[in-house]
Image (tube, rainbow, N blue to C red; front, side):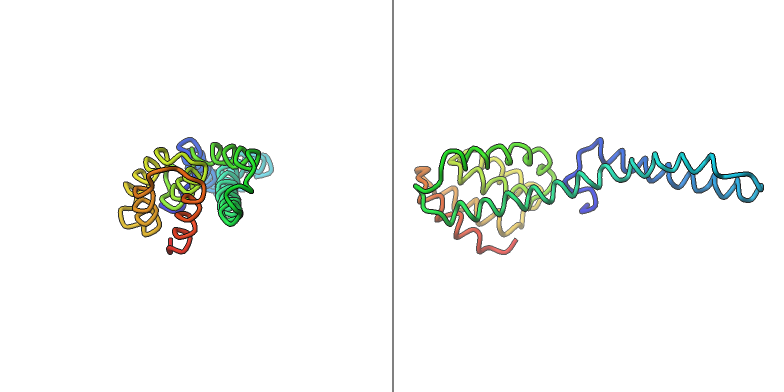
Length: 174
């Protein structure tokens, strides 16, 4: 489900319980109004479900933003010549990728982004495993199928070959 894509299990639980608590508090508030009781003490309790709902939402936005940053960085590095990419740039991409990888496990599109980054970094075996995971989630993903076929044909992880594969895969519709 797209609503929960990129969220970890505890964040999904937190979001769900926050919504349930919010509606329960609404019910209590309507009961208080019906009984002509003051609701001012109850209003403070509405902060808890708001925080419970907001935290996963913020994490989802961060997940989406991190994925976009990785895609932009990939596009920039792929367009550079093979020898212009510095080890510091690759290390920066690797750090971003490590943070993004855990959340990407539920999204085929995000897994393709991870696989593209792994391919650029020269980790072709990890890229193949990530693509298998993406194809398990969505067996008809054109980007995953295309990248998988191209990565399977690679014999040597040469930077120029990797860039050519990624440039060709970037043209495939996701």
